[in-house]
Length: 129
Image (tube, rainbow, N blue to C red; front, side):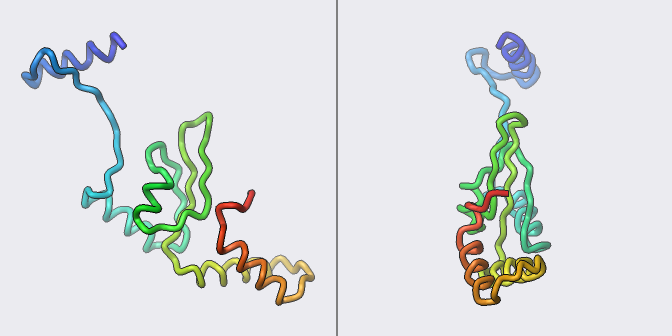
């Protein structure tokens, strides 16, 4: 804490700040910022599924941006969250899952593959990888 206070004092003196005010360095992700919002939108327009490995991004932030969270895994050791998200329509996701299941040649009737794809695409966050 002493190091942090020392750094803050040095910055305050350079900026001419009040002595009784302590600056606290912080990082934040703000979707109201046009640059952040633009990068986020461009990323989701490039692909059907987007993978983020980030310390700041949280699933609630994505859900507030009308993005479907496909998979969310919080790392206890790295401090980074692995988030797979999508803005693609649910029908497209369902079709992609169905095609992947068919490619596995599981010897399951097509009707059962379709039902399984429906279940998986409705609640993808419950899939254990």
